[in-house]
Length: 355
Length: 284
Image 1 (cartoon, rainbow over the protein chains, first blue to last red):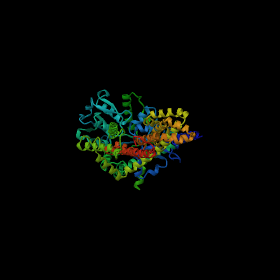
Image 2 (cartoon, chains in turn orange, brown):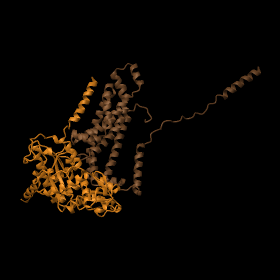
Image 3 (cartoon, rainbow over the protein chains, first blue to last red):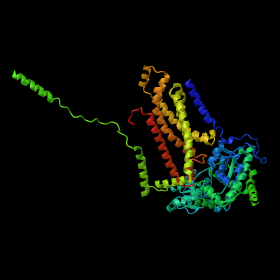
Image 4 (spheres, rainbow over the protein chains, first blue to last red):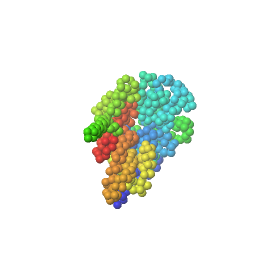
């Protein structure tokens, strides 16, 4: 008798643990009516619909701008972003919307995952406000792009940093054989550490890592150079099957609208953004926050994606050639129904503010 | 007659001389001797001294490893800001829940496996398989099965905790000395009495050793899970610091984990000393 009750207890414990979260978070609220990918987007978010969104920065912007109430009924935020994490979460059906740069939607498609871009943000005067600069290891002589010849360059296929490296080589008139590509994923401070430890000679670094790298290792001869290539794309992308659920599609549309207004708010309220996000939430100094705001310049959220699609097609063809993947059509990655959702929302919010 | 008297005196004198006693020599001590007061603190203190000297003299580049005083001031800033204690509270909650579930699960499985041959045949193999599969490699599957919320995190910690509890408790149950089994049979104990008076007390040292591994395992698992969809916790704070190149905050996190590990282990050893006060070993 004691043996049987112990067996039952162990079984119940295991079952309780596993059943607690079975199916992943994104499945909650699923099961709405089917929606064709070319049907008009529904505008009403039904009760009970839930989408999981991996866009931590925008979550904070919505909170600080007082807009969280527009979406919090149907949006659950996840603290993940960037290609590797969001792709993995899409596969796990744990995420509906992810925030990424240019490459992840392409790479996801090549690995058999169907995704669509539903919002895009670029930078005004993009060449002077690049996301990345090329970090140069201390003691390495690289002043211009052709100087990369023979150098060890950090390379991360499947990430924006990897695509940038390929574009830089092309611009410099070099091929992969002219340099030593060191395959190394770019997460956290991996590239900065690899540069300072001289494991690579050149690596694209972004954000405050640029400032930190130069302040720490500049006296040892560390440097950065500009690459003169547009690297400013920022997208919201979704697993296609989320768009095939009418309720989720409506929720995604509403989220994209709020996202657009949030981007506009952060641009127009830099002080509040620096204090509320970079200092209070992320633990940076105000100087770091100001540096990041200046570095980013101003957002360009256009209602016409045709130029962006052309640029992405060029990227796809370059990547396909260099990595041996099939050429795909950039326009197939975009859901054009969403093209004007964000700009219209910004316009409407601006009109509202003017009253 | 006078000759006989002289002979007796001689015999008595001889006997007195042979009775002299040798001085007593002290026995050689074979054990390690009495515990050194605060002995457990000497090693860590030495590490701290080496680190301080290394930083002060310039052997250690502060860009690679922050100086101890930088760690203290950074920790002070984080405490003043409220970030350290709020992250610590969140991590502690996760660790405690995962530890509790893991200990319970490990103990139940160990009893099932240790008290029954059929239980052992069924459970021991799969648990050794789990032991060989690192939690880090299991994470993608756990995300698939459980999503990216708290339940996935607690489950990961639980899985990291229950294995050492199981192994050491099971070993304790299986290595009861046969002498005690025979004694129990001789005095006619019932099976339940045998388990309560002989088996469970005999397994207690193993369980407590497993608990020392388990409490550390809980903190180790935290690092991994707090880098996935967390907005709080020490692991999250460290990962965020990596993104922004804040080396000093990363070191604060590492030092904090080290302290938490030492404290957890110390608490278990304290419990161990009291729970096993009936033992007489070299450790006591």
